[in-house]
Length: 235
Image 1 (tube, one colour):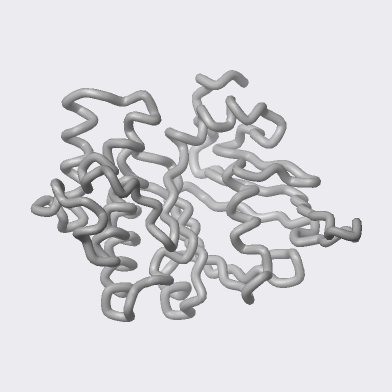
Image 2 (spheres, rainbow, N blue to C red):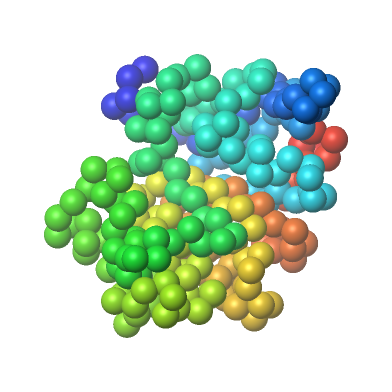
């Protein structure tokens, strides 16, 4: 498969799948530390899945492996039925930019860019420029309730507003799946509820699958399926 390959699988199939995935690290003294142990999981098209687990259980490591940001020590990763763990970093990156969107706990906005420019940046990385890309960015800022804040820098936005910009950015390339790592972790309860409502609603509207890493049991219950990562496997 080349970097321009079409990530289309059979209808109703898994959009993201891990098969027998292991991940280990070496301690400073050379000891082997296993984080993921022969883990298998799959996320279907349009499905929302939550993942919970104790701190240090390996949730972020799993997300990084699923997204190709880290390589598995064992096992296989499939994006829309196409194996990707055996591709070069460059080919993975080229596929990832249009296939996945990310929402992080700390927003990861570029401080020198305003809200609209931050959303557009993801489109530019994916090779999308011009009026259509800007119109899509504006549409999503309106969808997250921030059309009137498009010209504001991140320093001029509240935590909830920053996360709304991050959600708009994650969706700008119409990805097949959103990976959200504790997206409400830095927000107060009321703002967290609002952001979660918006994230679930927009993923549904856009037809995007969602993998939500969260400590909040109430948010986990709102997804189609709730999983737990414990002792290196998903339950």
